[in-house]
Image (cartoon, rainbow, N blue to C red; front, side, top):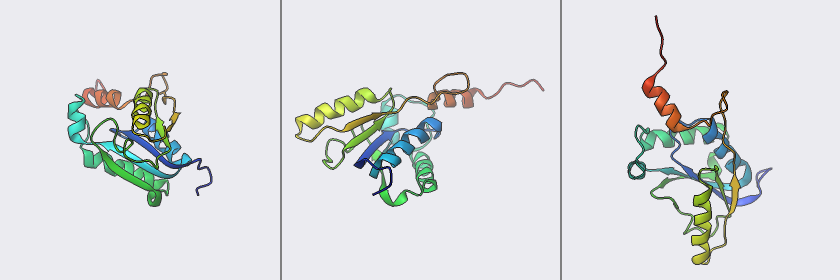
Amino acid sequence: MTPLARFRKVVVGGTFDRLHLGHQRLLSVALELGDRVVIGVTTDSFVREEGKKGVEPFEERVRAVRRFVEEKGASDRVEIVPLEDRYGTTLEDDEMDAIVVSPETEPVALEINELRRKRGFPPLSIVVIPFVLDGDGRKISSSRLRGEVDEGPCRDD
């Protein structure tokens, strides 16, 4: 068991586009809390269904997540899976006992627990991680980063 682990199996999911400090915080907490961690990364088709534009390709996002996990020395206890919908494997895996979410995705975790109850699975402990803010007090987000990359810095040379 890892020193700070409180749960046998933790799940965290997301698009993880342009892996930023907010994503790193979610992943770090999941790694701290779980003996094993399942990380769901949204597939390109799911991203399209959600109407997101300019998102990095699935394989690139998985590579960034894998690199982060390797840097944390946790590869041996992490499984990275494709996320085809909002629930991933949370409705099938009765070994999961916690889910790490942001305030934005907490409603999905509540929905997951309701569906788990209906299927006879125990609810997941929900760990909500506050948003990471930038120097201006704004939430760091992939959509903002995509916008800043698209627009680029304005310079008069």
